[in-house]
Image (tube, rainbow, N blue to C red; front, side, top):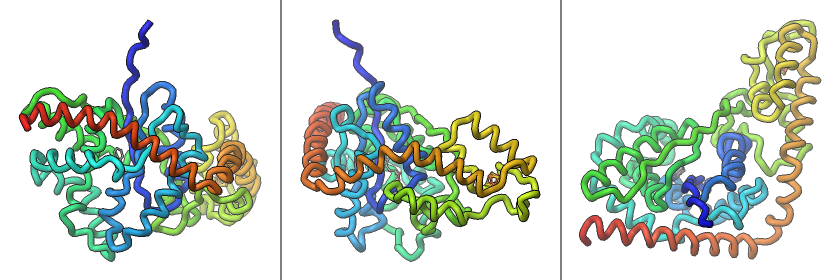
Length: 330
Ligand code: TRP
Ligand code: SF4
């Protein structure tokens, strides 16, 4: 008997450096779980990286490899999911061009991340045509695979909403080619970094997925906790503690509840609380560390996996573009 076709998922990550636990908990760990229920396309979006890293384009190549190793170590499986590089499928560029023609300027100008990043990354000069079009390229990524759903963190929600609007407009002008993609939000609180601010590569406060157990310990033990707990006997509030954001991501719920009570009653000290966290982080991360060595030492294998992924991605992209050109009458 024919099985019903699985729904299609697309998501991407920019190759701008090694992935950190925020990327893992906010996206990657969720993608790993989705691999069985959906046909997944996971794309290393090197053209998107170029929009902010154009002054050092060559560095992107090294980061592509790092991201691929992070993905595979974390459990993305090339037998089940299609893992590939964006620039290996030129149709992303063709569809981006077409979608750019029907995207009203105010739609992209009003995207909050656009204005924020212009200011925050002022040293990079992001005042370019390509950077403004970043979310249009993202819409093209999604539409190219006729994706039904897009698993992302909350920070990307506005981009997926825009993609949906662009797709609707395309379908209205030219006929129903694309499904409207749903956002599959990863429901995880933002992780704090080692300095208590949001974990981010650009703040230099990240715990990386490839950090060893010793490095993770060395980063967590000195972290500031709820400032009310000056002494061991002072009660604290876990929801005001940056370390507890990591508990929420790695420690089972019942244990979290127990710790929260301990914190509020000064029944547990911060050192012991961090030790519990570390124990659970190691349980989660150990298999990833073990798999990593095999991939890291085998660039040929990574290249083969990405090439095979590109071929599968291209096949679907070509089908879509036949429909797109027919819809436009080109
Ligand atoms: N903009 C996304 C990010 O920075 C990456 C991305 C590119 C993406 N194309 C996508 C995510 C398509 C989801 C779907 O994280
Ligand atoms: Fe944070 Fe744990 Fe210390 Fe409470 S006991 S302040 S949750 S580290």
